[in-house]
Image 1: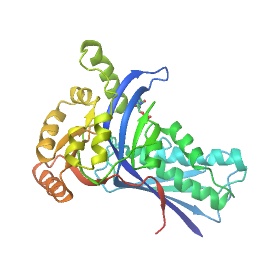
Image 2: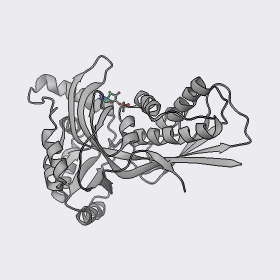
Image 3: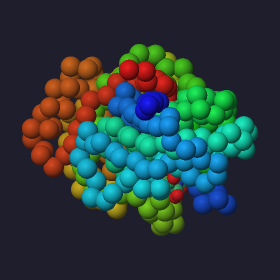
Image 4: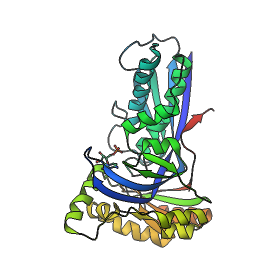
Length: 322
Ligand code: C5P
């Protein structure tokens, strides 16, 4: 018999991204405000109950991704995929805790978040995979890991994974993975535009470090008070006015085409920012009708862009039963 375990996790946008100094581990100290949005990745684990159980080594036999968005140039269905690594991390932790053999699993990802876009799509895959794998070990291995253990494993996979597990609106410090929930009223109508340019996260961070050597004006913005106050009002205009991303000048320096995209986006919305390390640009609409009209117009006028409307805040990773 084939048994399935499914979970989903949200993408994120950084309403504020303050980047401090580089730390000894190569990561930067951040003060960031995340909001989860309802563009979700779904991860399904399929298990053949008749298959021989694995007592050591990997449990994942393969994976496949179904793209609901533009496909990337390279194959992402490899052992390096964060969803794959997440399932192996849960299986290894399970072995340490319960020492019961597990049947092999296959992973299928339904991908809706832009690939390498600065929206934590890979981290959402990992978060959904952690939750699905926890269901799997509960069923076949006789016990489940605690939420705290999933967060700890998530941190080892990527700095955004804990937030994709948590969802909502949160302040992130440290590498961005020490989280506290923030007060936020209302629902926000986001539009995300992907210009389809590759922009690796690490490159954007190191470009900012280089730019700061020559330009003392590029100081870290670690104060989120204005944004926190705006979020309590629930007024998208106030939140839009408080959006800020320290990485934006670095992303624009690396991909000058982003300047035009930011101009287009701010004409359509209340205010636009580069999402995370880019290259996706996010803007806030006054309401969902305006956001969805703007999104359609952008898709009609700019064929090179992908665009999607999303609502925030959204729930963190959870089991999907369908
Ligand atoms: O943790 P994750 O794999 O998502 O990070 C990708 C890269 O982004 C890191 O290797 C690092 O270069 C950069 N980064 C950083 N500081 C952070 C988060 C990410 O420098 N707080």
